[in-house]
Image 1 (cartoon, each protein chain N blue to C red):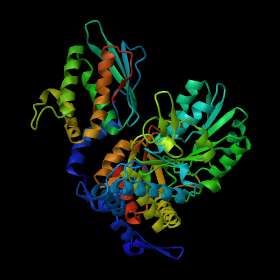
Image 2 (spheres, chains in turn blue, purple; image 1 turned 135 degrees about the horizontal axis):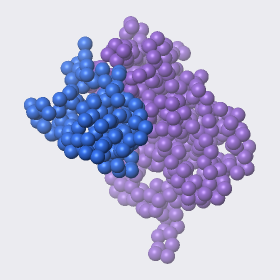
Image 3 (cartoon, chains in turn blue, brown; image 1 turned 90 degrees about the vertical axis):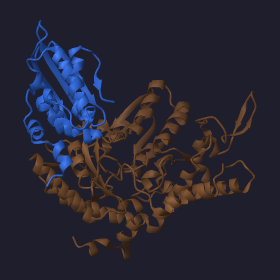
Image 4 (cartoon, each protein chain N blue to C red; image 1 turned 180 degrees about the vertical axis):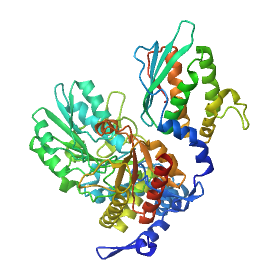
Length: 153
Length: 419
């Protein structure tokens, strides 16, 4: 019933993470925190991180409101980054960004992205790229503990 | 739905032939994602009938020239067409004279003109300006800027849960400190039609002038500025089936004469020396530089087009569509209509529980249905209703009940996928 492009955008994994987002909670005393905002649609995401002395992300969570794409993206991102080092997180950010902005060509090697590959469908929807990348941009700001609010505009 | 019944609706003994009207709009035959376009984003901008497109093209094809300058034939023809568009606008809103009609780039510029020219001259420290909760950003920010500059205070009339102005609060708010009232005639996000006559009468009893933002009203309601007795009225061409980039500021002549120019340049002067400049008479004093000539001519044509169908007929037809759509979506699970005022233009804003408007918009796009999703440039209003954004279907004179059915079926599909 759903069109092919639409089905690729709203994959089961995305619908599932939208319905029951993982790590959707507050971390009381985060080491790193940032707030993200998309003025176009009003999406608002807070990212909390607990990073230990070895630079490993021990815990990561998010709160806020947004569309299915932005919520699922935040949910999957937090699931994947838990236990990763800061450097690994930065590398994944770059890879994810390349994926959704269509920098990887038609048959990209995205094995390293794992479950994040479900966001490949976003490429076909330029208006929705910001939805998928808001959580990631906010996470990057949190890593560097930048005070200013991330906005996608 | 029986399309034959839908196509021809007898409104007060006048035949409203929507199929014939649809044929006037070439864009309505467009396909989107392989589906027939269902254009329900008329509050953002309306589509243009061939009559408007042809009139605009005609200017460029046959008599493109600058106005109010040359003595040559083309310039004279352009000037005549431009000025006759002004008279069409004047008659359309029943202004007293054509010198009360100023061409601007749109509603936003019209409001900025008043805030900047009238406001800077008349607003002083400690004065108060009243707006309402349901204003578009374009009727908030110019006044905020003015208030910041003059140390004046911006007061906001609250609204009830249906999205109607609480008039008693306005009565309490207005006092001898109030120096200006600027309110929206019909809300772009809620559809609410405000009791503007009552608002104006109360303001006038305090000697306070009133500006009406009529951007969303002008294509749905018959406006008579003399009967309303508003001091200023602002609207855009593109929401009235006319071109973008052109709009109108109506102002009572005594206000306009006492206001300083908004911008300096050509056309707004009568004599310039390096020592001083004498300003041109109204309305040219407020029209510096070469205006959007084709746009003004197109706006004139759009008004002629709308008048030929009749605003009363359009309002009656659109009202039927709104009621049909309101009933049709009321059964959908988790759907909440934002804006349930008694008096509404054909705007249907809604929120689906646990489904973000952006997802709704993307899904409907694949059904060929164009709606607006977002905060509609009314962020304070979204906050009032505690939603980040809404989905908004807004109906124009060419929409049909069949199209409403397509919208509702699309929403049902979304509920299945996200349910």
